Amino acid sequence: MLIAEFTKNKIMLLEKIISISGKPGLFKLVSQLRNGFIIEDVTNKKKVSIGNSSQVSLLDNIAMFTFEKEVPLFEVFENIAKNNDYKETISHKSSDADLKEFMLTSLPNYDTERVYASDIKKLAQWYNILQKAGYITPESFVKAEPETLEGEPATEEVSIEKEAKKAAPKAEKPAAPKVKATSAAKSAPKSTHRKQG
Image (tube, rainbow, N blue to C red; front, side, top):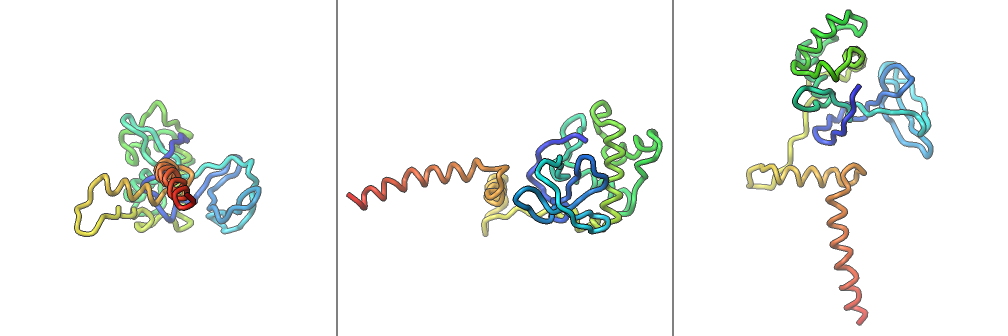
């Protein structure tokens, strides 16, 4: 599966779902330990711990190639869900021809050279695991609406600024908070110096 970083349009129900290299199925991140994580199998709800050395992929960070851009995996899941009325889809064990047809209906302009048969099988398998576990519902794909200032029409700048503020505690978007913290830190010593002098 092809990976790209995506931090916008997070889907709350699905954003903590992970795949672990070498382990079949999908898991939900429950909590962080000093030297690893507690995870829960989405199918049987069994909780286990894994070490920091485990190769983990957040489904929220995975995308699929089209000829124009990379499409977040959850958008592809949403297309599959709508095409199947939020029910189970084709089996990942289907023939390559059937899987290609499934892919064309799920992501019509997918890059046929960079999205492999193994990626399509994994897509179908992951979708069906999540669907059986109750994660695929119309509510699963509702995106949070961007906040706007009262009385002002929504603009791209306002929503981007709000998204940056929301993401501030995360390590992925440190740029905006660092700039503000740096300017505040520069002015702080001056005012302290004046009080002492």
